[in-house]
Amino acid sequence: SEGILINDDWPGYRLDLFNYPAHYSGDLDCVIIPHGVIMDRTERLARNIMDDLGDHDIVVLCVLKGGYQFCADLVERIKALSRNSNHTIPMRVHFIRLRSYLNDQSTEDLHILGAEDLSFLAGKNVLIVEGIVGTGKTMETLLKHVEAFRPKMIKVAGLLVKRVQHSLACIPDYVGFEIPNRFVVGYALDYNEYFRDLNHICVISESGMKKYKV
Ligand SMILES: Oc1ncnc2c1N=NC2
Image 1 (tube, rainbow, N blue to C red):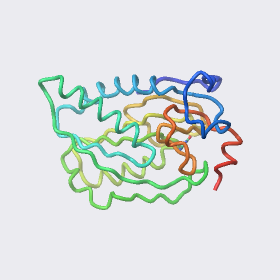
Image 2: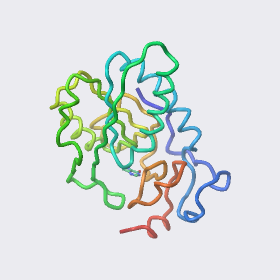
Image 3: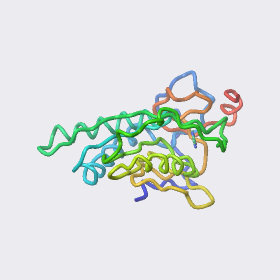
């Protein structure tokens, strides 16, 4: 299912209407998704996920680094649902690292670190949690790798899905927001490791790209 649709002509919110770290002043263009909206959307995704996966042991596979904030908040909401219902299931969390971006370009060579032995996934309901899905190629590679360990079910939760020219290789089962094809940062999404300490999802400015270019 697609998420909240943010159109290409959406100007975003002015930065001076929000709080954000002073060390990033001048490096950002606008706030495209405020932190509070991310939290409310995540709360609803948690309910949808529990409706589909809540009948069997869940293993959450958090894709670092960009997925750590979304995963932490999503797991928090799932825990809240579990402690407020008489029907709950145990949930485990595992972390894997994908490296595929330098500056703002996806590189072809994908390294999956921490996914050597995923045999504990066999027979489990696996939820892969990613911060952003661009072309979907990375997610496609990861899915093939996870399928080899024969889980009972695999679902993908992506906070952001980018509208890119060619069709997406992999559309997540749970999408927070569908956004324009622009480079966004914040809420654990980085540009050369910067901006992970920003709580809103923002569009980086030209000067910000230059300032932190590798
Ligand atoms: O816009 C983005 N911002 C941060 N990281 C990534 C992006 N797209 N694919 C990976």
